[in-house]
Length: 152
Image (tube, rainbow, N blue to C red; front, side):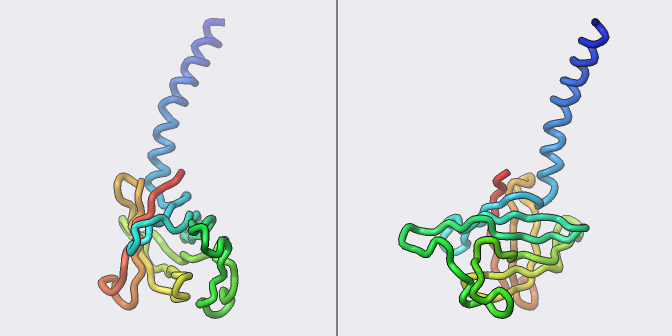
């Protein structure tokens, strides 16, 4: 009986120690749910889920924040190709990012409001609680950044 109690106590202590480590590991990766903040209005725009498939990241819009008078399920009317006139909610807007040191580079990001696709890179900040996402044309100096805030 004492052995069973000691084993249970050890397992509880191990779990209590491992849980914060697992959360810290989660903060070391951009995989998860993020709220993007508009760099022009400073208001939340959407919730984006970033996933990793074989070391390549992609981001999909899960929810849009819309004012009461706005269309709650807008279509990407300015997009071209297969995304033209498709619902923005559920759309993959971030593709092809791969880890490169402390950054994720080599990807593309779609701005559904403008229907334009830009080169993209990103890096974690604030201990993994925030994500700096940059879209640009040509060189990263010719672009704009948004801060995304971790939601999970």
